[in-house]
Image (cartoon, rainbow, N blue to C red; front, side, top):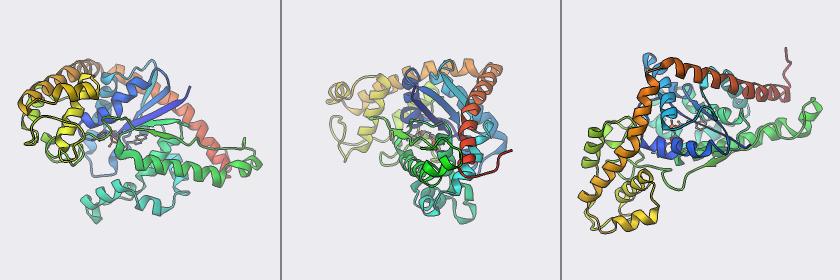
Length: 342
Ligand code: TYM
């Protein structure tokens, strides 16, 4: 079976963008692939954060995975920091990563601009190397992510090829390795719809955990009233009728796409259903589809979080399975790079 890995940071609340860009797609992949889904707590400390909240946010994020339908009889779910190999491989990969590659990362540039020089940790710069380590440790074939992670995936691919070139192949064979590639070169899986869910208050910026206004996003755990309220107040436009893909109507395209994915209809069905609608009618429809889709997730979330021993067991088992695979890769890398082994 081909292998898939992906993860979400346990920062703030998980929103519709995380769900439609990533988690929802994991669910449909877990039957056909060998899947590992982690909570990337080590990535969450690259910007200022609350130590008292990290552990709870990590478990809550795991509970969201399960509530959304990640099936632990098929997928391994674990916490990144519970598998030591992630940080260890990161160091080894760091030595093969040109700093220029990291300086070019859009997310680094954006986040560091917002944080201001004194607050930019080295880890914010090296963050994509840790992400590459998350992926390459498992010899992953595919990585389902939203559009904003595309550049990080591209870097991961380049890094895999570079390490294979520098330390793999014939050189490695001489050292007693099996020759050939050290890492599989993974591919991003970016969904045709939902890869870039936009803010409810501005159709030109991405829905994000860090946007100051909660009005800008639908969180998976928002109550019915919160959802209704946010949709009532979300930004629209003054055109008549509703349509996809009009560059002058980013909000319209975004809200129709959300409706499409929440209702499970096709784009064509939605385009036809909504072409003559006004915003008032559509907003009721959208609100209902969001509530209908998210309610069962919220019910399951409550069940899962009411019994914390269950979640702990899932995460412990997940970490054990993951560590087996990760340690094997890590050992190969040490060997290929010429380290003495104990
Ligand atoms: P994070 O936690 O920012 O986001 C988690 C996932 O949600 C997607 N996403 C979106 N998709 C559509 N529209 C949006 N508005 C939106 N906002 C976020 C992201 O693309 C992502 O798939 N570095 C990663 C986490 C990570 C990771 C990994 C992912 C660390 N190691 C290894 C895959 C494999 C991040 O910060 O995602």
